Length: 470
Image 1 (cartoon, helix red, strand yellow):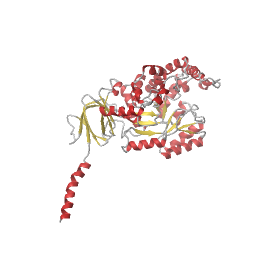
Image 2 (cartoon, helix red, strand yellow):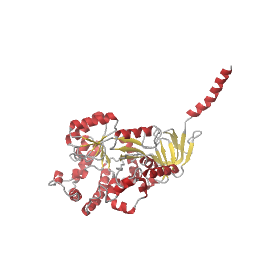
Image 3 (tube, one colour):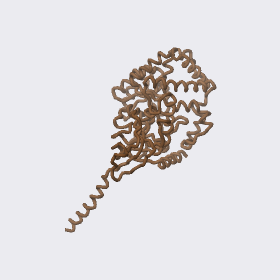
Image 4 (cartoon, helix red, strand yellow):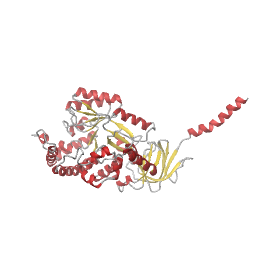
């Protein structure tokens, strides 16, 4: 009889404990303006109910029923948008970069060149909750030709057979995309594209020097980074642009030659050729990741270096020394002609982005994190500023960082907008980004897979990043 009573007592105690363990957790964002990224006008005075890592309900704050025991956030005067993506990054550590991404509302990144095994480990750690960081989509090592121009993990591909093998190997190892680079031979490039199509894995990256932008689009390259070689492809000079170039002996000759060749290239821009390329981009749905941020930092590195930046505290001294114009790889051999040309080119690239946008070309944000004065998380906000400067509306710039990456990844049914059923990766900001895109930087909180991270927590994360840089 005593044993029966003991069992009954244990059951009685365990039932409430079990109920407590299985009771769902709800996060409620109350009285908020929702900018859902579908293109609809902002929805005011809304309540968003989040269960676990999903948006469960969205409705008027005057009518929606709030579940019992919810964590309720009064968001009057605030605006709710999806978490942001940086679709072109390179990073080799996470102690600094992950806190910087999350504190800036960047909940997804595409690493387009790195150590595949390490990146997959970090991705798994994020997925299981062992690390707080953005979701990682990754290409792994870069595919480049003999005498590669790529830095970091690289697979040298000399011919078509090697190109197909590289695609097969990376696909088998778990890569999400194939990154191509400058010096790939033509036969290798087209073989990579063909094999990737069979494996149903997208090819992204540079347009090799042996390929035109039109050819890359027609072949099926899914996204072109840094605007590719659009101007080289649109010049009326064609291959004559590179005619009579002799080997370079003096390092200073490189920037002088680039400036002279680039000036000829811009002076001979052929509008008809450009329209043909743009039409192909639209027809073939070739995405553009212009990385205006890194173009801007390389162009104005002298100004950035002279005025300083509070975000430098997040950069280790060993890295920071290479950010000075005297030591930076892209800056130290510059000549006055080159500096003037780069400023002209940057303004022309802004104009090109506007032309592409008006033609119907689709964009995603990307910063090319790893370069001088490109900061994890922070620079995504400035990339959106530059897109607006180029001619996109604030909404379109936001879509380039939210719904567009979801569409590119084939995940628009589960992410990219603030809608019922979508993943609860969200950004709560204190002012309307549709009136001023810079308001995305006025962050009140970040929600990562349903976890609410208030401003105080985000500041603490940035403190951790600064400490990791020392």
